[in-house]
Length: 272
Image (cartoon, rainbow, N blue to C red; front, top):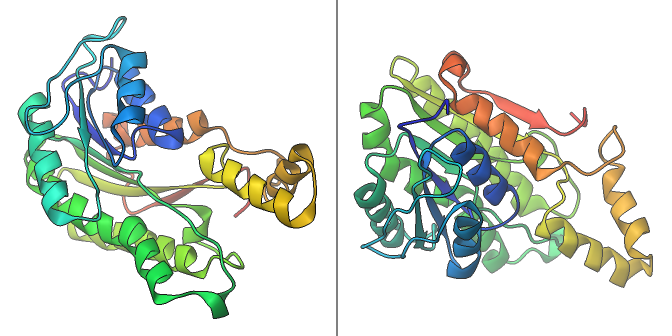
């Protein structure tokens, strides 16, 4: 229970990497606020850890079996909207106390040749992958500065430190996320807050499932062949497990990681 007494707010906490992070942090005793656009996935994760809390400004905390206790608040919100972010963070704070850990996990990717990237696609991608970081970090910062050991961990991507074809908006947004991480870490270096990014490679989540479906449609390959095409980006020849990403996040949240800040840590099998 190395995170006993901490309150972790996880955006995009209902699926994939976010759900794995929620489980890892709860397993070490952290109280949780799970934020995402859709209530049902958030409640499913909360159910797995205990019993789902009610959403909204009157979010409730609940205890889960085997945790000490695993207080979980479920708060649906769109992290690209400042008013919703501020309301969600206030609801989590009311249910669980001051936020000591912020995990910026919400994100989305759309692929297109650069010549066909529309302004709407660009803005959608920037809004969820970069603008949301501004809103969430600002909403959590007063609590984090008061915490004995505040933590900001942003789930960026290998796309934040290298380029991929047909993903220019996503690559640009994730480079921005890494840049913001480094700038904020420098600004907060003399405080008790650390700021880091975790950069997964191709990870076995719903985003990969969508990519596999598109590959099958375009190439006629079967699912195994399509997945193998994506796995080739990883020198280890496999997709990353969300639990592996969650373990990196957990490590950054621990007290003994207080000297680690301003870093973009790849979880990618040596891809970069």
